[in-house]
Image (tube, rainbow, N blue to C red; front, side):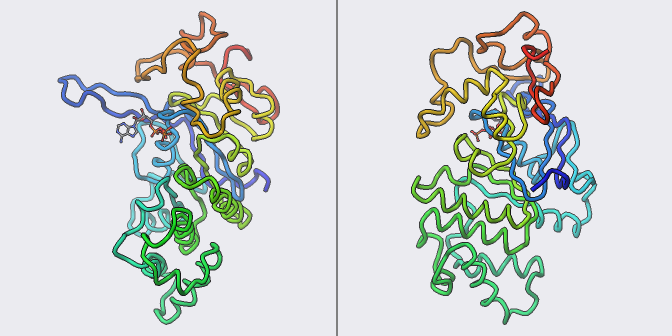
Length: 326
Ligand SMILES: Nc1ncnc2c1ncn2[C@@H]1O[C@H](COP(=O)(O)OP(=O)(O)OP(=O)(O)O)[C@@H](O)[C@H]1O
């Protein structure tokens, strides 16, 4: 789908978390610094990067689970902080849903799958007559490939496999007719053999017009599912653009390093990148300056530690924050 229908626009997002809570002076770490991106209708934006780079924090701010320190998040052009009335908040939470890594964590072990789907349908008034629930629930379960639906509905979460539980979570998102899905490593805890099924389901959701943020360590699945990609390093979006362009012509030394690490897909990005590089992953604070990758970058210049490079468009819709492209 084309890029003419922005749903979520994130502009210059900054997030500081307090550290050393016991010391007298309050110190902060900067988990996100000047991060901007857009989620479009019917498209997926993959956010890739090492552990701790700020991927989940961005999603949680969009989901209103975390507040932001600076910047703007807009939903259909409206600042999400303006949604303060109960009704508006509920509608926003209904439209913008998260899928988490652990499909078990978001399901209640004491309730059946039927209950897990009935609750959002009733709460969000998608079904007002309880007699209609079974038909609606079975059709949702069929849509996510959980058949026979009636039998699945009677089960408890522990009676399902990890992949099936993630499908239940997806069915819940479909139940409330979510418009945006923020998927935080939705397949990383699943067996490799069933990951593709869940990814294909997400692909179907996108085809239905859902806008998606897909957080992953895995560049291969990012390429499979997403049209757009953003590469994060220590709270900074260092490169972004259309997925094929960015992955075929990575312009930032960090993206190039990620690409060179791809040959072993079983390893996480972090494991792949360990060793052989100079410098540590820095702790970024509100006082930090320069490019966060400078300490590990084999092409770093003096100015890289003095200022954060502004985004440059190296090809149409392909942006990078790196002085090598000045
Ligand atoms: N609630 C919190 N309180 C304090 N620090 C936090 C909190 N949530 C995240 N952080 C810190 O913010 C930084 C970014 O974390 P985040 O979880 O967004 O990274 P990530 O890229 O999603 O990592 P992973 O791939 O491991 O999930 C990390 O240094 C993390 O320790």
